[in-house]
Amino acid sequence: MKKKIILNIEGMHCPMCEKNLSAALKETEGVKKAKVSLADKTATVVYDDGKTGEEQIRAAVKDAGYQVL
Image 1 (spheres, helix red, strand yellow):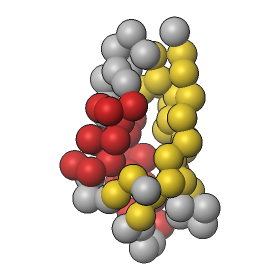
Image 2 (image 1 turned 45 degrees about the vertical axis):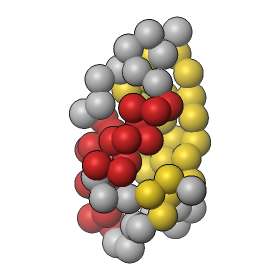
Image 3 (image 1 turned 90 degrees about the vertical axis):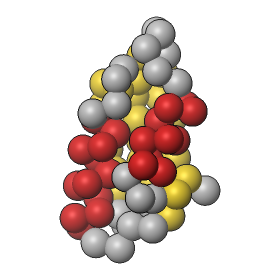
Image 4 (image 1 turned 120 degrees about the vertical axis):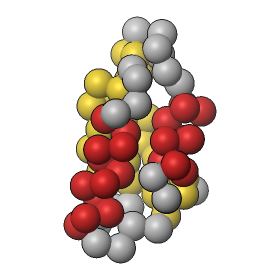
């Protein structure tokens, strides 16, 4: 089943950060869509909860070098 979460992100400083985090999230198994906003400091993620969950998505953010608030 598809679910959507919006995470507040800390540590992004430039458009490249936005692209890097978006790519990292999209590489996470089960993630269908990921939209990262530098201006809003958020990541909106649509995922299949049968393949992944919030914990794995938060881990992908951390592994990419950013923090979830």
